[in-house]
Amino acid sequence: MSPFRKTLNVVAISAIAAVAVGCKAQPTQTAAAEVDMSLPRAAAGSDFSEGYEKTELGWAVGAKDAPVTVIEYGSFTCGGCGAFYQQVEPRLAEEFVDTGLVRFEFRSYIRNQADMLATQIAECTGEKKFKGIKNLFFSSQYEWLNSSNPMDYVAVMARKAGVNGAQFRKCTSDTALRNEIAEESQQANAAWASAEGVFSTPTIIVNDAKVEGGFSYENVSGAIERALRSS
Image (tube, rainbow, N blue to C red; front, side, top):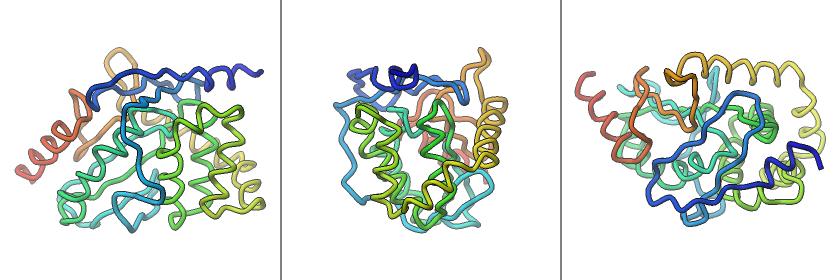
């Protein structure tokens, strides 16, 4: 068994009482995935808002002229990011995105090979399929990371999102795309790592300021409200 498969099969299941624990990461390195089985799971096919648009570094939803921009650097293999997707994003959408106050952008941060493969699929297949792919990766996180072959499971989920075999092979064999994705994670690490050099996912940026103190709804919405008052 490869070191990568051993890493992904060792899934840390912790009893997290609130959405407050992220995943430490270094870009392009393999890291253990954390999945909290006590958290509710998103319903199949659900997402917090329609209308994703491809940006230079990620995928955005919400009014382009919204007074506040929220960026999430998230990892598809991070349990904290899965919890943020399921517990926090829907509330942020209802309160801020759908009301035109916030434009929300998701940027994939690469922690391991499964993150890279998932991001390649999302990047290569375009914004129309991003909603389904994002939902599949986060809502089936436990099954994905505990499968006998997580890399093969990515292909299964891609097919569920409408990606055919030819598209899958094209996306995953694109070396230039892979290098670009890795470089974007390196840039994120350089810009937003802690003073100790640690980058945790999810990292939330509100109007170019990193949200400190955790990524609970109360903490993130508080940062948004302060940005709205000063805009």
